[in-house]
Image (cartoon, rainbow, N blue to C red; front, side):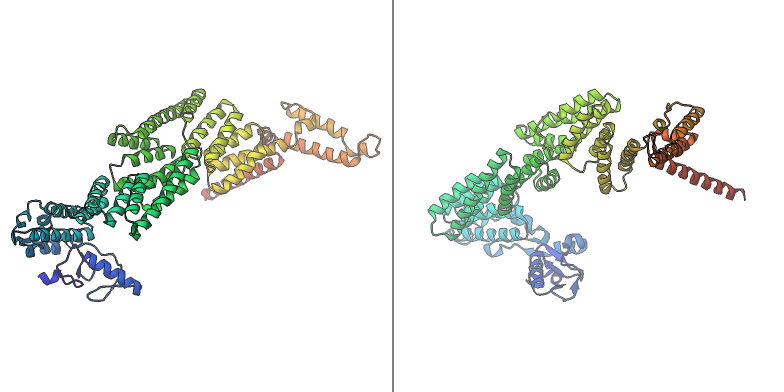
Length: 578
């Protein structure tokens, strides 16, 4: 049975076993290294044992893919990896990790082989090696326990603290990493990795200046250490980028601040610099990206109050007010004294409350009250001009101004909304309505025609485009009542009488001699227009359409539509009678 669980690559009992589709079991690390090496030479991935082509290089862990096989492996009897150090433990494979990290085991080995400290040091070194193995497979918490046991046996070995510091950093325990790194440096001032790791941990906390000072001191103490000198040069560059980014942020130059912070984040990978990137993005109104970044930070560390605070602001400025308040409350739960979260939460409450009440006021047609409430939300300050929130607030207030007939204020707010987001359909439509109301029909039609290309199948956009087109054509149509010199409320008889009088006055034969001051061509055009006026105003249906605002072309189109509809209805009725 045990042969089934020997890794074909290292020939040892599998460590963190994975299983291929062909049911061969390997150590995860052995398999990953094999795949990485093979993919450098070939495009395909083959099983290291049977050489068959695997569809995917990714393979599941044995515990999940084959629980029965995992249970069998866990029952395999093994000895403690520290058997050669005097440990007599024997037990199930599944209990090895628990035995190794148990703080009560292995302390009795301190004097088993000699009265000197040799066996104790050997045992501590063996525990460190076991910790290294756990570290390599990603079991960082178990590695920390093993390193801690090694330190308990030999507390003066700097490398043990350095290894534990590396594991602390991998689990996000930055303070513990800093403490162990400092201790490692105290015991071994030339321990290069501890200097580098200490500065990395300090950068994780956002202490770029402290990291720079430490690396500067290390470079002075170790002038011949090439790696330390390279790290110092890197930290000089990082400090300059940090100072430039901070100054740009303070000056409101968010684009430059973003560039500096992104360079810091890319160089170090530190969460603190990623948070600076997110803050710059929020200040620029690029909230979608900031929301994604802070979500990854929170998943990595659910106690990151800073990430909750920045994400809460990003959600607010993105228009998701309820989620914003929830995230800011969580930030304050994690850190009640978090000043950034306190200010942002107060702002979010004002905006959310004012916006909700403003929408309610609009529903109740209390537009003046709505304007005041939306203004309160806008005036809270600090909302990025390119954010979805400011666009939404200006758009809502513009709509209220429109309902109040304050068209200039409406247009001003629409402009502010569109400066934030030029794809805000509601602001464009509101602007079109205000332009139409102020007789700027041609401008409205032009804008709605362009908008329809963006929202091709949107019925609201189509409606306002047609409305602008209708109003524009209405202003350009001939005034038939003026042509006939009759009132808009004239009866059918009065219209006909007016026609007769005008037709007699403008008959071309009366102006053929040139003695009337009007040429025959001018008279003919006028006479034709008088005939058109009678054709429209003398017909009840056409006159009704004309009074509604349709021009001659529009009237004819509506008449044709009515005839087609009547014909279709009549045809269907005829068919049903059979």
